[in-house]
Length: 434
Ligand SMILES: C[S@@+](CC[C@H](N)C(=O)[O-])C[C@H]1O[C@@H](n2cnc3c(N)ncnc32)[C@H](O)[C@@H]1O
Image 1: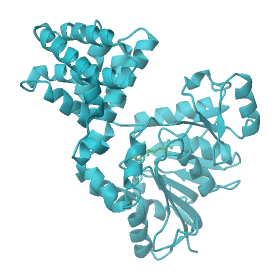
Image 2: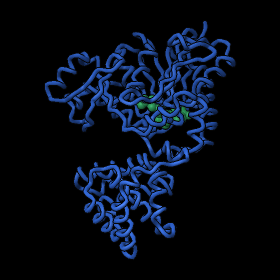
Image 3: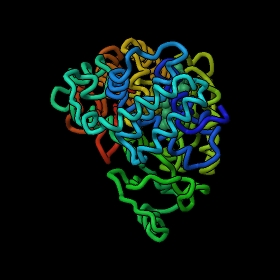
Image 4: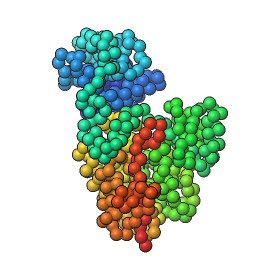
């Protein structure tokens, strides 16, 4: 991959995602490593993320320009044309640069025999750009840029809001920060940012800040010494809802990469112990890195939250945060590849796993203790329905409502993704009756 230009790298990444089922998170960094210039790395990410946002439309427009679809080894050239068309339609790349670089990438991908075809298709895109940009579609997938099964589920769950939800998923995500209240007040950090010439706005939860302009967060004042962390606004509610008190023992049951573990320790610095559990040892390394940057320490355990017998010492916890593995359908704007990688059949399997983990965690909770169940999903099957079933099955579980709409009939708090606001998230809070 080393001699390939940015467009050739983009074609490789896109093929990995749409044909080989890899996530952008897994293959984009690999391709970025092959590029020396940080600007090229940024351009590569912009192209790959953009293609994932717009995929069904770009796909049909590329196919419409080809006499025969490019199959087998030639599929990478189809992916290259997706990247080329995306640049012309959605980026401020000069047309001649997009054409020249895309044709050059054809050679670098060892498909030089197709460079005439690529040149012709790219030039046709340039000629027909206005029509391509204004084209309207009569099917849901191309109109709303999501898979059909997902559109149907969102439509059923939110008959009033579904178009806005899908539209929010197709926007660029906002950048939210969490001020470290154990280092300085939010107002003080806002003043520091202002001095450094960085525009920021306070958010609804007490330590949230939004940066209207995305930037390399490692360059934020005091980032290395833990004055601030990246965390979405909606995710920041978890510590307030769990509300741990001095001297308590807390389990963060699905902890990696540790965003919420760190937040709840900043929120309550006098905890007796925080156990950060995750099934994936390699992801626990990320938890340790985050704790180190913030100068915090927790007990890290690699284990299965659904099977406490394999790792738990039997001492019950005062509070448990269960940020369950989920469909991540509330954070699609951050992971647009998930629109094409997620399968409808995943949802029932995830709901079953969540229910098993929830029952297992309940056993580890002290009588009188609090458990917060959270997901970054917007699907009722993983959220409200899950908690409704749990409350019906478990006699000592009592809902602690978060807001007036949160009743045992419609338990929990469903947040939907909104432009410039938080991600889609769900929270329910329950106590174990003594
Ligand atoms: C939504 S992420 C957690 C995000 C984390 N709470 C944060 O705020 O940074 C879900 C995590 O659950 C972990 N996980 C999945 N199944 C698990 C299980 N059975 N037991 C424990 N952890 C599990 C995954 O490895 C993943 O790290």
